[in-house]
Image (cartoon, rainbow, N blue to C red; front, side, top):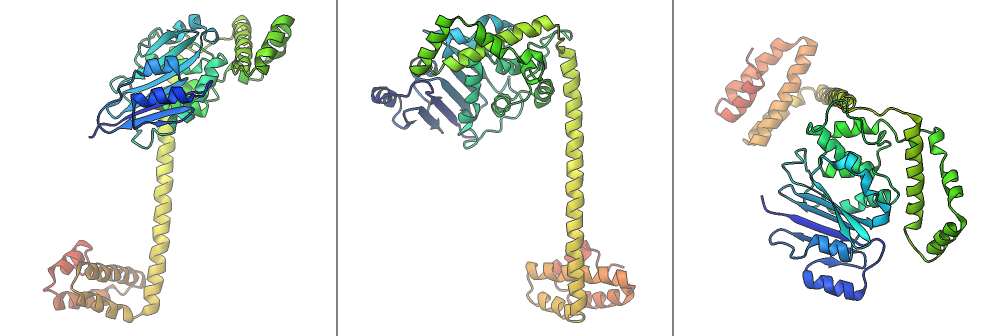
Length: 386
């Protein structure tokens, strides 16, 4: 298998200037570079830049995929919008995640190799292009304090048996499962049955209960001078004002939920449900395959009936057609002649004229005995063998 590597970086908060693009061009003469994106792929050779340094200086998102199974995602966000103290509950047993300080920002780096992500990595040279656009909303989620991405990584540790059965989940569910979260789980090969089991329990803010009615209270509690500062930042185009407010609201919801005493599922419960999900998926697949088999059989039966009706209308001319096909002395001609004889046999069985059919076929066998490829086809279909 030839080697393939794909690198993509995206600048979200601050587009690249001409000097930035010129500096990046020095790293690669073949990369596709725009004001918001740096993309390069290799079928041989390697990229000589340092992805982490590119993230520190220019970019907010990075995706790397190699044909031998290595996969990496990096996300850069302002330091104050990621509560690192909460992450240990999610990733203490996940060595594939690192959090790097980068000035006023932090970079979340997630990297799995084929040994760790053992489930199908079906991204070829084309499948990985455009994937970062699908995953980009994960950054907005992190900016708003949504840690479900880390819950998905927590599932990889659960899958590998790193937790005791009574350990509670780090969040009360991750549903409804967004397209970006599903794509993230698929990219890193997280067990889909575990993901579905986790997604069956929605976040409290999606339950429609009183815990979701804290937004107004949070906004009202912000001091007037801080509200003015937030509005000024918003007027100046600060893209992080809305995520920062959502982050506060989400934190307040988490506190209210903790006080409510709502129980979270355990590792044992999630694993048990994932096994049931797998059985349900297999059963659904079996039903689908059976339905497809039945539909194909019905289509084949309709097609056969149409052929038989056509053969009936043509009458004796069909036997002449058999002879004409045999005159070609070719594989396709033998195939068409045999197919006609198969239909004639079916009609003979339906009409009770099998003896007459056998007699005519025996005559054909005798007259064309020097055509062994044709006789082989008759024998395979058991035509004229009694």
